Each structure stands twice: as structure tokens, then as C-alpha cells.
Image (cartoon, rainbow, N blue to C red; front, side, top):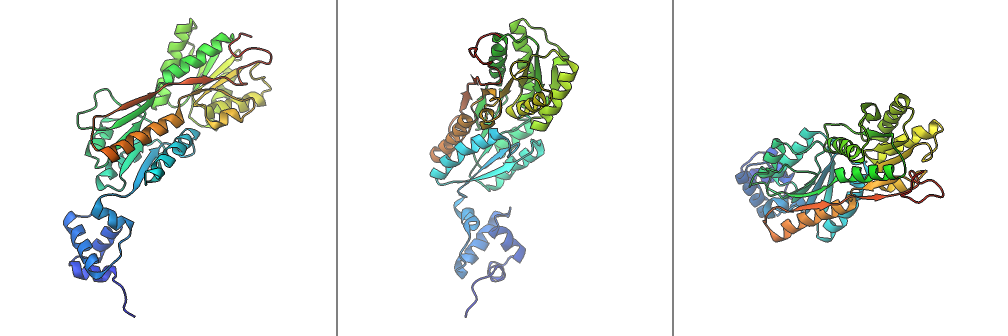
Amino acid sequence: MTEGPTITTIAQRAGVSIASVSRVLNGLPTREDTVRRVMRAADELGYVPNSVARSLRNRRTDQIAFAMADIGNPVYVAMVREIQPLLKEAGYRLLIHSTDGEAEDELGVLRGLRERYVDGLIISPLRGVTEEHIEAIVAARAPVVVIGSLPDDMPQGALVDNVRTDSRTGVRLALDHLHAIGRRRIGFLNGPLDTVPGAARAAAYREALEALGLPYDEDLVEVGDFYRDSGASAARALLSRVPGVDALMCANDLIALGALDVLREQGRDVPGDVAVVGMDDTDLASVTWPTLTSVSLGSAERGRAAAGLLLDRLQNGPREPRVVVVRPSLTIRGSTTLPGTSPGGAR
């Protein structure tokens, strides 16, 4: 029985090293002339290339990447649920990558686009888009959609589409609601201030208090991280420091769940003693007890819009960048509504 072509026989026919053949067939960065020689030799020997090798010839991988900060965050789960069906229908597989919110990891993903390991990228940089991000986007050999804010002075060569939300308006919706139900000592549990959402929501909290005629008090603010256990720690610290708090505005639903855990531990009635509002309106908001009033920032809609923008570029070619802004809304549930009162009524 005759043995089929191997990387050794391909290397001999192409006049290159075995390592070079391996790099080409595994889709690793390789000089263009080496790729051509290896692929020609493989064809002559009857080697059946895998999908990676085929993609080197037609420059299509049939794959799209989505890079987000935390694969376990319900916000990104909601986005994936919308992105994947749209891409699948268009003939693409979705690759998911968690960056842990690290800029260097995000930059690595963007710079990798020069090797065209995917046909396009959706990315949500947690700490914002820097000059290095922009340089990598300009150098990319595949279209990019950013979920999150972009600088106003993006260079001409950065043909990147953008999907964003307005979390400042979202915070204002939450505080207006808490004020309307009679709450005046409104604490704020936030995530890291060096992140885009943390910074935006901190500024929005101060602006909303000022608009309502309420004083800003640093003792009413606790900064942690966007996780449930951090939310619990932040709530415990704030409640022990300011016993008279009658409401908690939380920078996301996970923080709010941690706050509810602590309030239950301490025997405080929600919303009788302390009303609680989250942000993101994830699936968790409707299954906790009490159910959680939360600001929706349109996670599913943002994912759907990002996939649509990327597919449009892939299918229709170059065009001017587009921006989609998803408006927030407030869903009122049990954590701010006392029995026998209307959702907007005072205590």
C-alpha cells in the first residue's frame, strides 16, 4: 500500500524545511513565497489540505472572533446569543475569546488580524480604545466592529464600525426612579474607575444627584469590581459606614446581587428599608428575590447590531464607518416597588 504525502515529502518537493511546511499547514505566519511553494507541492503530491490550508489560498476562514472582557458575564452571554445565529446563517463560525479586560490581550487579538486568522472581529475593550488600539485597527487585514465608545478623532484609515450605549442616561433613569419613590440617601456601588463603564457611571451618578438637587457625598460611594462577591464587599463597607442609606444604585446586576445578599444577611427589607437598582437588565434580574429593578443597556440589541455591521462589510465591501447608539430603558421590579404602591409612587 502506497503511503500518502506527508509533510516530509511536501518539504522535499517544495525545497523548504519540514518546520516551514508545518507552519503553512497550521496557518501560522509564514512568508508568502513559502506559502505558495508549499501549497503547490501539496497539490502536485495530492495532499488534501485542511480548512486552514485552504483558507491560505482563498483568504477566507469562515470564522469570526468576538473578544470580550469576561466570558462569564451575562451581558456578553446575551450578546453571543444574538451574534452567533446571525453569523451561522451567513456561513460563519463564531470564535469566543476572553481578554480579562487586559489591554495587551486586546491588542494581541487586533494585531493578529494582520495574519487573517479570522475574517472579521467584534471586540469590546473594557478600558477603552487607546492609540495602540487604533494603530492595530488601521493595520488589520479584516474588518472590525467595536462595542463601546470610540475617540471622536478617529483617523481616516480606521474603517471601524461602532456600537455603543448611553450608560449616563441609564444612571439618570435609575436615580430619577429612586427619587420618585422617595429615596434621598442613595448609595452608589461602582466598578473600577479605570474602565469605560466605571468612569462613565461615576460621572453620571454625580450629574444625576446634582440635577435632582441632592448633595454628593463620598461616603455614599464604594468602588470595587463588576462581580457579585465584590458587590457584597462594597455593600457591606458602605452600609456599615452610612447606616441611613435608603437606596443602592449598582453599576451592574452582578454588583446588585451581591448587595442583595448582604441586605438579606443583615435582615434589611428590600425595598422597605433599602431599595436596589442594577444595570444591564440581565436574565439574573428576573430570577433573584426580590426581582431586581434594572437599567437595560440593550446587550442583545448591541450584539445584533455589531453582527449586522460586520456582515455588511464582509458581504458588500468597503464603506464609511457607521455608528449605532442603543438607548437605555428602565425595567421596574420588586427591589424598588413596595406592595400596594405604584412603581413610580413615593413611600
